[in-house]
Length: 274
Ligand code: NAP
Image (cartoon, rainbow, N blue to C red; front, side, top):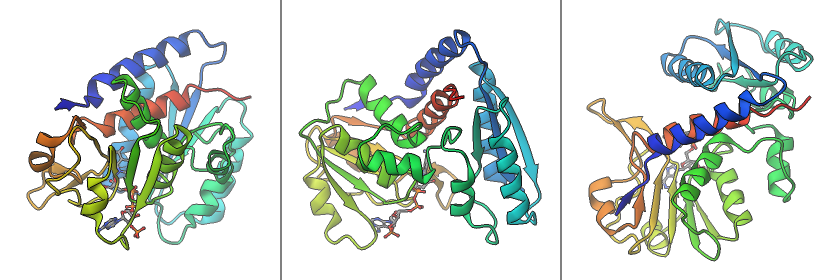
């Protein structure tokens, strides 16, 4: 079994991004918008800021209190869209309940949508056009698999979870690589049987779902899930001890997809469309 070392590969990607930024005429400027004082969101935002500094991308954080009106937030996004100094905009999710997340995501210019969540970017991915930005997590997963020269063409890939930010774009990106993709979700029956058919399993659920001893021999297992267990320990969707002996490759939690997401986001943030 080979560990998919997201920490190591992300360092390599960040170095590449740093080189790319150094040679660009325009220094990218990423603006992260944080609404409210959710402690996890604040940690994510700080990590993104630190990563941006590391690769030479200018970054700013704009903070709003959780009672900001949707209208004020949309006006700020519009202002950032029209600011030629700003090359990337990211609104940290989740947002307070009174704000329509979809309206906010749609308000960001697709040319500055470094998260790749805008309907134009997601739509382009769906119809086989090149989006300005691919969503960071699935793009980071492909960067990780590519680093280990893992082939996807003709493989059976099972994606568990159908969120707009991971599962759905992941499935599209695997299709683009000519994998045969099965998407699973909370209504899927006989998940264990489906997992047994997979050459590649990508799980993005947020609970211990891949417990099955019978993952296919030498399969590739990517664990996107990250949450704290009842003891407060960071864990993922895959029961590592049960699953890893049968796999060819497996990503750990932490140290797998998490750092790859940040590196992939920085790759996106280094792009300048003006
Ligand atoms: P999400 O919006 O939280 O949705 C979870 C998905 O899991 C849904 O599609 C749901 O199905 C499915 N699901 C729930 N129970 C299931 C079951 N018993 N069997 C099969 N599928 C089931 O998803 P997300 O935002 O993609 O997040 C998923 C996990 O990935 C979370 O732990 C999150 O923290 C983590 N994550 C990590 C990174 C990273 O960089 N490491 C990035 C993003 C997300 P339905 O659609 O039917 O409800």
